[in-house]
Image 1 (cartoon, chains in turn cyan, purple):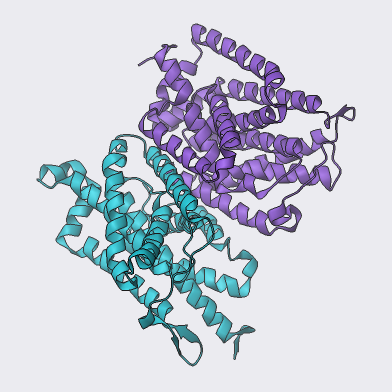
Image 2 (image 1 turned 60 degrees about the horizontal axis):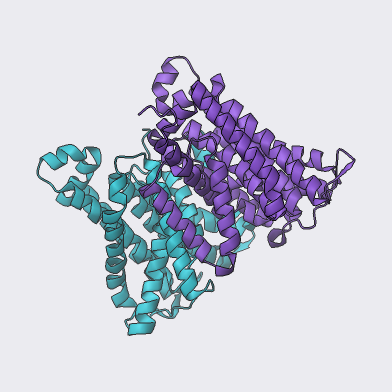
Length: 294
Length: 325
């Protein structure tokens, strides 16, 4: 069976890969957007923290024998805690300065973290086995769907919409949104804004680490795994605009799919298509698809 | 960036300040003239290429307040075009360098038109993304030879009679290019154009209300910065007879930010000092592998947290050279 001269097997296979990549774009850009909303900092360390998540899962498995499912719960907390430390020790000092200093600081941190991991583990990738419960796959008739990949897409959707729900529909989220608008006023109402900022950063970092754990069985666990990815995620963020949570999710998945389609029809451009879309969006709608001009 | 205001105030030519900068310039020229007697000349040529690159970058961030995280694309593009022209088309070195520089200027115009549509953090992310796009383009384009790069680029004869294979001829050619570029950037900073650029950085709505077309000024600053970065990249390709992916990679964009930040954003000599330190560090730490990256990261963090004015900025503040606050 063929569609536009492309075997359906290949088409759906690439679309699946696109959805998987989109899951990670969505998770990572969501974390960036949450952090940016409250801290006004673009977290360049995000890619390194995603990598830390994958390594953390790898180390828990090989050193302590703690498996994938426990890692999903433990790793975001551990890596998120390092985020809390970073926020308390360093980022806190930058809030009164130009936003660009936050970018420079987190870029430096990313270099340090990636360098340390490269020293320790070398630059070649380490394997992480797919958990037993999710090995294998099923035949859908038109394509073969590996169970683990289906799980990643579903889990990522659940986490994304969970985050959206908490921020947009709960009391806690309303505090958060209020603090984004006017931190001083919210503080005056007796809400501990500095603590909220710290926890928000920890949460965003935890999201990156969670993405890292989910990525470990799909991609190789390597010190550079987050470095190139984060640049694509930046482009995703520029396309979506950081104003809306839902915007980040939709843009993330959408661009993953477009990238997958490009791999089928014009593979030469598959690396660059997201950047090209970014350029077009900048020409047509500089504030981003879901952004508001500031 | 507000924190650099002071050093810019220092750069706006109070007579005492102008005298200090003339002395500084003489010292710098003397050091680069005597330097090769003490240090390996190829190392100093590398320093001068990167110093020019950092000065060009500083023109944009230090005086325009625009943080580009994709400046490697200008360094690398000029390098590739220059190397290709010299090797495949047989251009003489001066023409190859000019062509490379022109290519970066053109690229600066196109990317600048896109990037200045957003400000601040978005500007940084957009330039980074555009540079990454070009990286993938150069990775796949046949004329760049992918991972191998363009190797064995002939240095050729400058103006037909100066043989650049001679290390001294090459050294003084680079010296002249660097000094010329440095003076041109100095002139731009202190021209009425440079003053308007600073005004836009400090308060864009006010500059617009005074009738200055802010976007056109920012675009011109971006193109100028791209052009001088290109000059540095093209010269570097001739010196090392190589154009490779390293020069278009995002880590190179990070390095030029580091040089400028370490030396002092918005200072005249800061980028040169920063380039000297960063290039030396790479040279001497090279055997220790990933420690170079770690050291660079630590310097980034230290600069942002402890001395945001950079080496030259801090020294100027310490010895009170015309600082106004």
